[in-house]
Length: 306
Image (cartoon, rainbow, N blue to C red; front, top):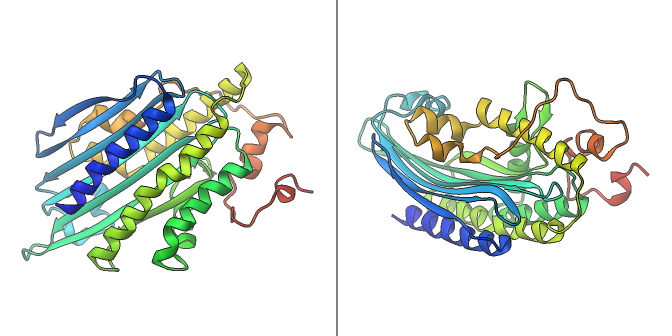
């Protein structure tokens, strides 16, 4: 199948590039089978030179009943057979000045009961910095915009806004990061065009992320900055366990728990009612950077309020 072949190749390319950027021992592969049908290959990097931990998953699973997390938006397909495949990754850097990144591209197919499949694509990528630099965020969003441009003038704006709304810890009324792209249930363009857009998004991830890694990987950091990184990682965990549709789908569909939860950071922290010092870099993260905005229109003067 063309989609499966593309996803397997994408996993290879991303792993090879991230391993080269890290310079350590690279990824360890763990192939697995799912009892209910299907399987995948999980690749995990631990204790690298740049990345404290990260994983790049490929999975292709199928079953007799679409899980609730997927059928919620399509109640007419509840209880139908399905197959789902995708590549999902999260990279947690060691240096607090290097952002965490997440990307996912996926394909779903379900039976409509009449022998005809109902299919849709989803995916995107988003950035979670701890000590953001405006240059990096503008670059991230420029690559996202460039990936969307061939598919329509409004595609970036629509999927950027969707990302801002999706990656939001509603119980804290706080963004998880500075966004990027998010889309789901995409089928209205026809299969070839939707698949082409999926490839455009998947292929753009490395162009968006690696230049940021190279710029920030050797920046000195303190124990204070490390403590703040661990604190903010706690918010990342909260989102993934409470809201993330991919995590919920994997657990509800009987997926492999180790592979599903590879998105968790190796260390995180929670502090009761902690508040950053006003005017500090830690306060700037939530006061400025975690407020959704048009990053391609901001400038350095606006960043500092001058």
